[in-house]
Amino acid sequence: MNLPLFIARHIYSDQGDGRKVSRPAIHIATVGVAIGLAVMIITVSVVLGFKHTIRDKVVGFGSHIQVMNIRSLNTAENYPICIDDSTMAAIDSIEGISHVQRYALTQGILKTDDDFLGVAFKGIGPEYKLDYLKEHLVDGQIPQFSDSASTWNILISQTMANKLKIKTGDRIFAYFIDGEDVRSRRFTISGIYQTNMTRFDETICYTDLYSVNKLNGWFEGQCSGAELLVDDFDYLEHTYFNIIYKVNRTMDRYNQSFSSQTIYEAYPQIFTWLELLDINVWIILGLMICLAGITMTSGLLIIILERTSMIGILKAIGSRNRTIRHTFLWFSFFIIGRGLLIGNILGIGIVLLQKYTGIVTLDPQTYYVSEAPMELNIPLIVILNIATLIVTISVLIIPSFFISHIHPAKSMRYE
Image (cartoon, rainbow, N blue to C red):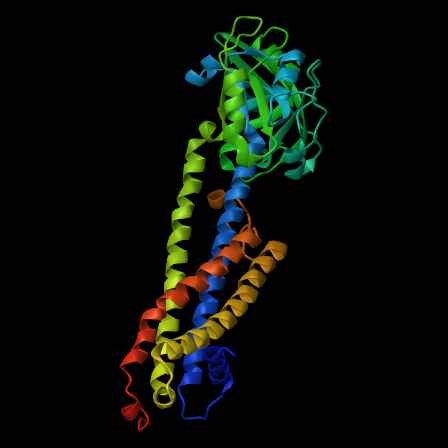
């Protein structure tokens, strides 16, 4: 029989009498551990949900990897590169690439009778994956984008619609300036999307790849570049090295050189900002573990002082200090275990409540999301539980040595 474990169970199950202070101390220690773990679970869930939500929104506009003219990367100008069917097939066959889609960009002005707005027209073809746009479509429908004819349909953002006071089905003129030449085209608004990513919602509208290429005066097969989606985002860098090795510095049929960049390189400010959130997470985790450790240390010292007579009796009948220390460490383990159980129920419950109800809302203009995003990561929660248990038990080892200074003769007379 494990004597320290047996005694610890008896102490923990003993309700005591009204004069004892151990029971409130146990409750306080349990609550401290539970609150600490619940806050850690909520913090990690919020940060993971926020980072992945923002990342997915940025990827929805720019994909994982972009292949384009090397001059477009080095300057602010929009230079064409030829990406025909054979080039797309070659890129798609590279290990780690799941999808290839072309795009073309041009600048223009949307004008109504009362107002105007400068925007970027993004031309996309029939191979373009529209899942992201469908997810954020708020009105109308997404047109059938073409690379062989102009439908003169556009998809605009809710921000643009609000500024220009237009709606789905309206027709609007767009003006394109090329030196001294000004060309006008009339588009029909087929749909309106909203992502709450202000940087993109204010500037990007979608139309046919063919229309943008014609407006740019580019040759057959030319476009601004190709967007590549990878099989696994965790292996983005590895896939990117394959692109660098097989695509970069090669030439197209018009002797233009290919180059590429990842989503991190395309939007460094956004991802640097997201990485800063990790610092806040570590600070909160450290504070909450300290809270759990302090409450457990205080509770253990109170319990040791209250059980001084029992400690003296155990020493008098031959128990070693090590055995008694292990007894109180097992006792602490029961308190921590109960606190972890309550903390998991509380933390996971709040995360699931927010995830499925969206009860906590945010300002989308500031946070890019309309409600606090939550992502429940079970492996991380298990790690948090294990880390909290190990750290709190470890910090209790030092106060447990207080038992060594208790003398049997004096302690048995202790009240």
